[in-house]
Image (cartoon, rainbow, N blue to C red):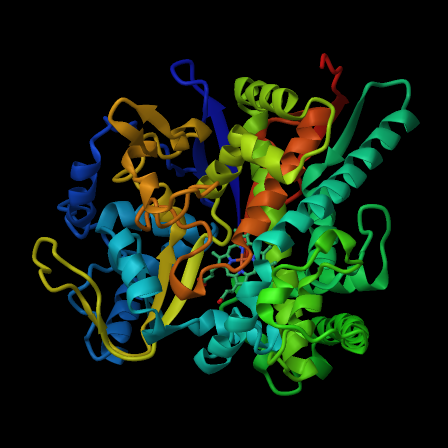
Length: 579
Ligand code: HEM
């Protein structure tokens, strides 16, 4: 499932345009959409409904396989999804490129709710904010994680992401309060220290090659180590130290992440085959890796329980973290009065956060650098902000608030490459999706068991909601103060979420949802955004960064997240500080 991102710079607009290699050399599909004329928020909102199912173009011809697949799908779903537009050529077009690219093309062709017939299965693909809001927030408890839970359950057990509704309700009540303001403030030091450990390593490497003034590095791999160290310390106070060493635990973590990734791109659940864990070598390795991590987590849980100080949640949220040796989430969960659970559940929770918080953050940092390296003026603007706010000093909780442009770079990267690009749901009961558009006044009815992909990628690049949707433009999120009050970014309304440091799904009314939305929204969103902002600021404070090769050489692959195929190779040069 690999595809090549090709970025070319045009004279008219010095920003990358995105084209995608779809596996067929003769047909490069260009995702670049001509800039739309900006339109006011009121019109923008009306267009939300018009964009559904209004395509009038003649359908493309379809092959026998696709027709057979669609007939089978309709038959098996009792014809319930029959009136929904069907992605033409669904099966045959799927192979050879990441799924989310194909889903984007079909979104433009069929509208924002369509059906993807795939053999005996149908997936409903949603690219409309109102429908996304309905599924994620308004009717959230009529859906579970479906296919995703099936893939992740062997790894995360009953951790929050794959958890069934009853377990989720119990555990979310314990886990969400752990990310309170004082904890996040304490984490700023962890983010800064780990980021500085990374730049220190780069400085040492530069000293070692003293003849040259640049080093060449795969920054994606470095970000992966950095994110692993941070998540280990933040979640269970364990220092992987992966920036500078390789341990059996680190190898096992990477092995498990690799397997989770492989499963999410593989359509046949090979891991469920009888005796697979004994016969299939990759399954044996996976079981071994899991054991190494589980033993490590069990040891940490045991230690935390031995030093337990049982306290009420309010007191835990007011602890003086500067005096505490261990400010981790594990400490919080263990010390929280009334939150007693068996070690197995606690282990599942820790494993879930380890996986959820690691690769996502590494991917955000990778794409932030990728986009900045092609926009030297934005890179300079970012460094100018860092110099003005930090000088040579360290990031603090307060200075983070002033690093506005860096924060917007992080969210703009998440807009262009959301991690993950699709949210997966399965209906537990029949439901009617919001409608209101031509010919579908009451919306589509879906039966229980319907699998749904909410394409965050499509929402984030929708020509109906974003001006120049494929361009890297952090400035689009800037809030301006006008004589008439505060004017939000791109026609959306920041007053819906006053005081938010980062744009979110509430401000955008579900047109921008990098962390999902509703009750199952990411619990680590602020942790991740602060971590990414600080890591980026520390790197750009000390180094000038440019891509080693051409942007065309950066190949893209997807699993749970979007990342590069062969790394993000960059040249780093130490900055001469004028401050
Ligand atoms: C840039 C980094 C991150 C991104 C883009 C991200 C994205 C997301 C998204 C989109 C969801 C919702 C999934 C869905 O609705 O199906 C989610 C859920 C979750 N995330 Fe994150 N995440 C990030 C970092 C983190 C971190 C650092 C942690 C923990 C320390 C974390 C823990 C979780 C958990 C536990 C859930 C499940 C929540 C629930 O079901 O109640 N994530 N994340």
